[in-house]
Length: 165
Image (cartoon, rainbow, N blue to C red):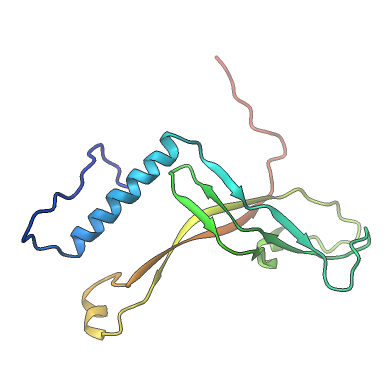
């Protein structure tokens, strides 16, 4: 989203020559207006879904003695603090590498409470096949995929406090 106070859109007219920057400006206008609406008329957070599901490995009955589970984020939608939409279209596994910093191999280790975060991300897709275009045009990918990233953190030991003066 642009960080200025001017809201500017294209003004089309017959016979106008349009280039890539014009189409980018049109997309930016539409995207920024939708994001302003998302944070101006609503609040950020989970819109629907995005539940965390634990699935025991095959053959385990879900008793207290189970040693591992597979953790998934269910499909859903959220809006971040900048009004960007985060959409998860299919069940997504939280991989072991996300949990690795918090793993304790001791048998008697206490269970940890962890926060699962989802954030907006973009991925460039469809790189040019023409070497000349690739060399002369940076970021000349054909598509930008709006996606998400997952992260895990440990909550603070004590909740943050607000001091009123």
